[in-house]
Length: 184
Image 1 (cartoon, one colour):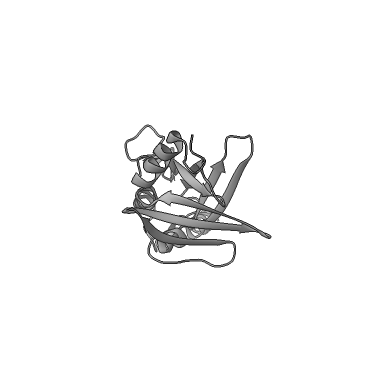
Image 2: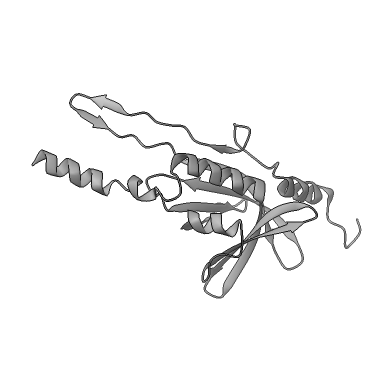
C-alpha cells in the first residue's frame, strides 16, 4: 500500500458519509419518530408526547492527518424541546454525549454559528455538502464532519414534532399549573 494512500474501506466510508448514504436505521431516511396519540383513562386525558426523533449515522472525526469514521446518534425529544443530543461512539464502551440547542444546529446549516464550546458551520467539498461541528472541552477540541443530507433530514423530522418557535408550548408548565388549579 502507498504510504500516502488511504485504505479502500476508508475511501468508501468517506464517499458514503459525504453523499448522505450512511443511515443505520430501519427506515429509509435514517431518522425515525412515531406519533403517540392522546389517551383517555377514566376522567383524565393524558397527553402523550411524540416519541423522540433518532438518527444514527457515521461522521468523520477530523484528526491531524487522518479522518476516522465514528458512529454518531442524534436524538431529539419534545420533553426537552429546545435541545438535541449528539452521542459519539468510537467503538469502545465510552460514549461521549453533547447536548446543545436545536436552533444552533439549524443556524449552523446556513452559516458559522455558536461560540464557546460548540461551533457549527456548513461547507462543500467536491460537490458534497457537509456540516462541520467543533466541540471544545477545556483545552481540547475535536471536529467532526457530518453529511448535510443527514442533518437536514434530522432537523426536518424534529420540526415535524415541534415547530421552530413552538417549543414553549411543549414544556408543559402552563398545562401542569392549569391542571393543579382546576383540582383545587
